[in-house]
Image (cartoon, rainbow, N blue to C red; front, side):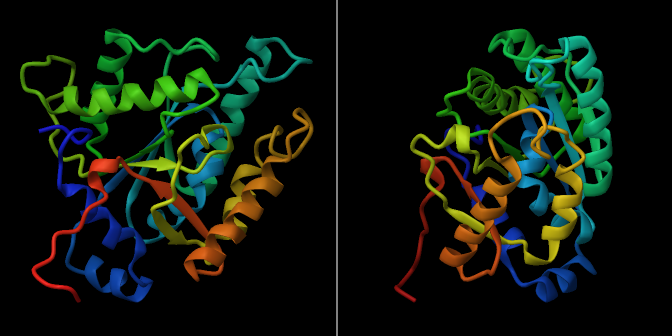
Amino acid sequence: MTVRRGSLLLFAAVGVLCEPLQQIHAQRQTAPTKTILAIGAHAGDMELTAGAVLIKQHKLGDRIVILQMTLGEGGNPRLSPGVYGAQKRREALAADSVIGAEAIFAPYRDGEIPNDEAVRRYVADVIRAVRPAYIITHWSHSIHKDHANTSLIVQDAVLLASLEGVVTQHPPHLGVRGIYYADNWEDADSFSPYIYVGISDELAQWREAVTRYEFVRGRISSFRYLDYYDALSTVRGAISGKGRAVAFDIDSFGKRKVLDFLP
């Protein structure tokens, strides 16, 4: 059974991410911690979109891992990809340290992430090595090819990671209970916020993390990344009644509830 095409386990995560902190803390006294793997096309993507939630989950005791598929080294018109890539790597390590996340850097180049068998097996092996309960990544309908490819790769890699017949360096992992798609301005086509997570208490730490990136501080791109995602947390918070919030979408097949009667 694949997470993308039929798992009913996806909704297990809704309660974990959205319950009051007091209730979660009580549960954590008896429940083991879990691992959350965030997979971004470029260094900074997951920190901006989901970093506040990752901070929250880390504070609750979860292990957080961020896989950077590329450094986003082509994004500085004043620096060569080699020089800017080295800078982005340093910035990613600094930002992820603030979040409390482990960083993994994939061997792919900005703008050139291939959606092929080799990259799917690479991500599958990372999933097997990290053994996450939940994965956060891009929504597949994106204006950026790297984002769209990363989303599709992750969906396929979850299946490959679970199959005993697929041989990689690490043993199979069947424990991915859900994939969450991050709220990214470049991935807005048909994105429909479904899960809202309050992050008011994590906002300051999130700002500290993401501003380790020069492009977030406004010195490279004219797009106001910090202002956009800060304002977006206000919008999502207003809708959810959570003060400040981050939203995620899930696959359409997971948007169902089975009830014995109307509550």
